[in-house]
Length: 587
Ligand code: ATP
Ligand code: MG
Image 1 (cartoon, rainbow, N blue to C red):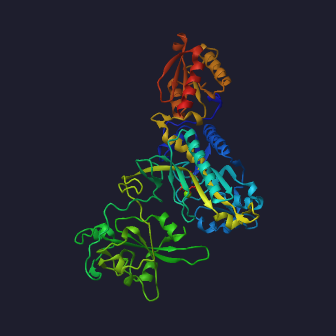
Image 2: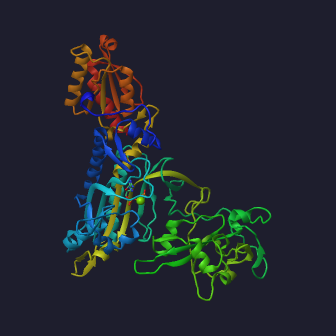
Image 3: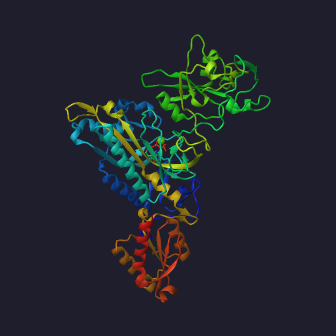
């Protein structure tokens, strides 16, 4: 490709809309352009990179038996009602109505469609294992679309779905996909690692996210230096808080004391009360809708004052993702007190007309001498013993792990790292096969439900994650495997018919014939401008051709981010191929 015939609108300055480095580089290097928040057009260079990433994905998923299909992006809303996700996923669903007022959903993912297909097509155990995948546009009405392609309204996802005869067979499918994911992200040149992920309301132990460490990531990963433990903070556990619960015996009964204006853990921690966070019980109330058919009910959550609620764990425990904090008015009508005065002691929590479900975090087990709100504005209770004074409906792990707490398996301190989630593998079990009646006859002729797995990769997010991880002050450094072109030939002057241009054209032809993808920067611009652009755009190898070096029979070869080296013109092609071979091995 000749630069003058391509379309690479590079920018000197970062547009104001760009928040993080990779987002700035996407725009400055002419990879994408914004239509509006969360919607981007891929320009020619960007599309080439995207196609390369997709190519790697297609190869690896096919190599573990994946069969490519393409499902409709427009889905009838009935199947979302059938799966129950019309309600649970309603926050992200883009919906549309047609001329007859029928409602449609723009695909955010495709479990409903693929399971409908499987229900109609799979009838015998002989047809499995089956693994269907597609690479297609997905739509999500994100609360906060941001960071360019990282969290977009419309993005490209590879989604795959496996169907197996048994749980054991499904685990094998899962492992194959897990290994394929490792190869995919490695081939994309990404430093990446799998972490245990939250399985939410579906449950089960098999879910991993593939993470790319980056400060701009939207996930916190908890890990142990031993390499034996890494989990998304939504799922992570530890040996418990570093400061153990207070177990000292105090008093025969809770004692009410006057705390005017104190409505927070902080307020009670301060003088004159001086109650540490670990001696307090934090009381929260959530309104939960357990399922489509159920009415909303209030659930009380108890945590230590120095802990934070982990909403993913809470969702897992209540078996629903449809919940929200109770409003001040709702709380007042239930308990006659305002949110800052809530407390855990049963005698103050239940009224004759109301018995509340109480979930308590394990860190509170056996705690004594605790302080909590009195469910009466302006008062707290001290000398509260969990065992004696608080009736807990259900104990569970509800707290968010903190850095420094000890790893359950190694006993070493845990660390926390920000990361970008680029992929997700999930053993679904029979959740969707049940809803869509996806059954087969086993070897004994018995009807069974298909056991499913689902596997996603954010293709466009992966592209930006590569930039986030691979750049320097001059611009993007594309790993060879995904680079839009491997080599940029930069003649320092473009006088037609000159020795410089003849050499440039010849090397262009020879490299192209050797199977190398080459950009020839034939723009009549200052060399400085062209070099800057080539670096910004991030071609892995630059071949500079100038009169002076050519007079010595040389051209200048410079790997992006590497050292410039003079090579003989007649060796140039060989040398470029050698650098490509070395990069292919090392990346
Ligand atoms: P997140 O927690 O970041 O919202 P998710 O759990 O909703 O992700 P999945 O439903 O597992 O994501 O989708 C599979 C992959 O699609 C994710 O691993 C991610 O790489 C990508 N992805 C999800 N939402 C977006 C988005 N709004 N923009 C770009 N990529 C996305
Ligand atoms: Mg999401």
